[in-house]
Length: 199
Image 1: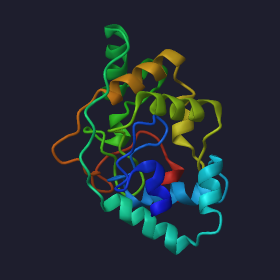
Image 2: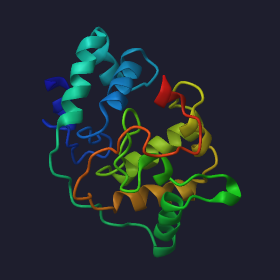
Image 3: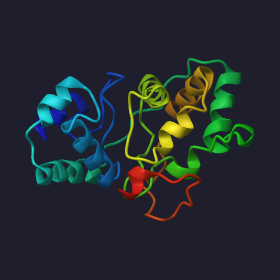
């Protein structure tokens, strides 16, 4: 755990560094799958790939369970650095999507309070706009992927650069809800088939 804490905080709360995200409170299944992906080279970030290279599945599961159970306070929402029209676009895409382009709302999979859904859909609160933008960009350009059908890649490829900036800015501006826990498995009827949820 201490190897993780150096960058992600003792309780997985994240740090001021845009690219060391909050881990705490995310579904254990999601965290476990990300740890496996980093260990096995499907996600690439050399310091993490190296740190996890020889760790057994059982230990990765312990790490995932630990951070999933942590509930440190959320940071205050990020200061908005985009104009009102861009922030409004982000709110629309997050809460309603864009049916004309077949873009589902973020809330349809990540939950109305953006806290994620068990067992494997992450919450998107408490993350920096630059981190969110980088991850959406990675899905869009294929540098981040998951098992087929890769629903996030499908969605990200429908988004423009402005859409990504808008979504990231809006999500980063949201305060934490009173009870920031993932919703129970099966609570949300997802608009797309997602391999990462079932495999």
